[in-house]
Image (tube, rainbow, N blue to C red; front, side):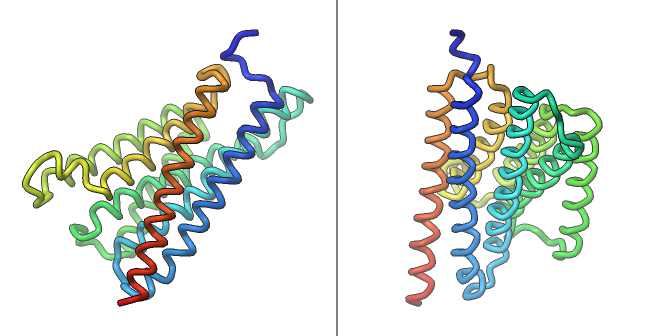
Length: 228
């Protein structure tokens, strides 16, 4: 058997386990940061929280899309709402990426919350509509990579840290970079023929460990804030 063509049952089992773990971790982080946000009122934490809310929804529609593909393979039937699923994947994942960028630049952003909402919602809606029309997940990845890279360059240029390595490898930079990278990988993994089952499992385990590490950091930060 070709190792790059995954058996349907095993493929679906891996995907549902991965989705449930990631969704649980994202929701846990979103809820745990609520108290931190209330106690500190830091704008960056508000953006940080939104990342995990939007990723929870984005990962749900990603899983739903894969479930529909598997159902089509088994029954030949495709639900009427299948095509609209692209809109939700594009919309919520783009908002998640925007909030990664906003959390990175929170101290440098001069726009009001209303202005930010208008701009991010407009770009997310337009991107999701184009994704719906083209059915190209590569397009939405390109848009999101452009947003992320522009943010990264701006952050590096305006950072007051003394060296490039300290700018690139701060704990927050690594966290945001890993979150974005594993979302892109999860989109690439839509293709069952792209990776072997073992490669897919390894990537999913690393992704889960990233989210677990973020949850642990959030838990420690909450305890620190509560003790102050």
